[in-house]
Length: 279
Length: 293
Image 1 (cartoon, helix red, strand yellow):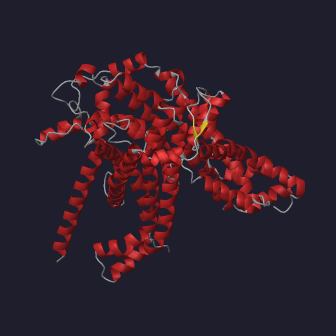
Image 2 (cartoon, each protein chain N blue to C red):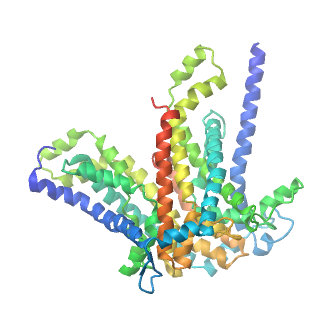
């Protein structure tokens, strides 16, 4: 009986490991293919029979990526846009969230409800008029055009309000009695106590901006204003057969997010569990 | 705080809310209302807008391409949503066990989630390449002649679905792992005392306890798939022969390529109504199967 149970446990473990290996390799295989392609010569990517790993590793694809595209420019565009969007979103959302959480004013519940209601609107509804508005402002192909419309996310206000509500009021009350005004309390007491939610929200904002495609597609048409996703998609269109170059760009575009995942896994995962909706 | 009163209080309210509120008004509410108005016009941004009343909607309902895009969006949903949720759940069960290589595997599933749709789509375009791609090569090892995938009207949508499942499985997994970790061990211990086996525990504890997670995952993947766009635009642009055209692809196509802004706005409002309808329906149905403690 005991032996039978032990056997059963071993079989169970074996099956678990087999499933683990099969499922993980299905996930990893495409990445292996991506990296290996990026290390091949163009000629080698188009040779038959296909070899999963190149005999001769070369950085030619990466070199050519920088030659034929302004990859550095696209990378820094993406980085600049993502950083400013992140900081701006955090600042604007946390301020609004503070008012909703801590100041009782007439109509605050209704206003907050309207905020939540705007989350129901899919971004595709507003994208065309927003594009027309940018054109009217003369913001097409500018950084402000890429950044400003993305600064106001109701979801961030919602999550931060939740978090502020759970903070103990006593500290704020004490600061208030000491003569601090709202702004001082907000900066010195509320924000420092809310680091986890700020980090989580910040990482999600950065990722959304770094990966976003639809808005840059509308708002930019000049190559020097392209963000990385847009530039990569364009590269594929232009250099249809140079897959080693395209894969090199893809590898480089994923690395920053991968670094963030390695450093701040806990916060990033929390961000995904608590949010979810695109846009 | 009790202190602030009257003018001073409203000064602070304005101070904190105004940046966000102004932004919301200019960049969300105003475009939304404009969009609604735009549905009544024909406008290519170059000539003066022409008022056409409900013509855009009339045209939409009689346009076979619109129905095609709706049908393909539904095809995408039917192919993508059930599989991504079932597989994501399965992987979560697997990676919630104490086994070696767990955190590495979790990272493997999670990397596509943090990658952009552009990166993932480009990668899979190359994988699906009929002649030089690795997928048909692997199929060839089993003596299967792979299809032309993205160049084949029959296989383009399945290819997009496979790509999307591969990208999002880790996201569903993460939600379920969080859900699994929230189930108190006592429930399983009590069930074990009553002699419940593995399957019974799964069916009578895990499933009902995870039903809120399933509801959330279902809602989000449904809403996201009604808006499927990036992967379509990059991998096929809606082709070949419109076989992968979707609602949002039609919106972008009509706005950016054909300069039909009013018609694009009309499609976007139909999309909104569909999503809204589904959300209401799901919220109504959830009382029947979602179990809250």
